[in-house]
Length: 242
Image (cartoon, rainbow, N blue to C red):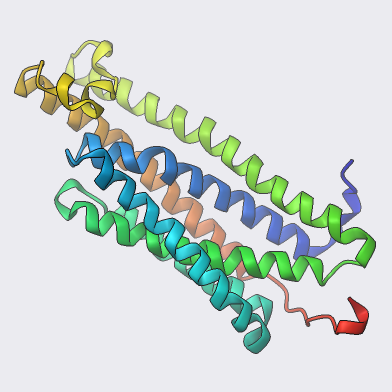
């Protein structure tokens, strides 16, 4: 089902691993950014959705630009610019706190969308032009499969990290573990049923746990950038060779 010889190709191997990292980053944002905006910043679900939707705005814009960049500067530099954007975006989330507000969070998501649009487009075009025509389908499928694997790994790793950090925080504070739930923070009606002190404790616990998650995303962003430094140069195939 998966031709293992494709992994011997340096370009394909680096592109697939970088895409796996990208899947982790996307999953981390889509799962935990709305929770942070609603639970820690105390904003509405609409505002939380806005901070995440900017990623979907930046991605197609960058993908369109990437098509022109590939023709002018090649795959490697286009992908590397995407890696730089991912590094900057994850660093902005590493610095995120409640006082910075949802506009800061939305801009950070937009930067990551730029990084994904540039890098993913460069990867797809590079892979399809770096294999024979009868291998393009399976090479492209393998590449997309790695993003799905990255999302699965991200869900398990980041979700586990969040739960571990929240439980550790409440144990350290001597609070019952039943408080380690975000349901109270995400429901405005439920937030009004608990005391201000208890609400602040839950917010602090969630903030502490998500800070750890965003630190993890920042390290993934660093790894993605470092990996793309080794992304090889390649030339576009001519029309008659495609």
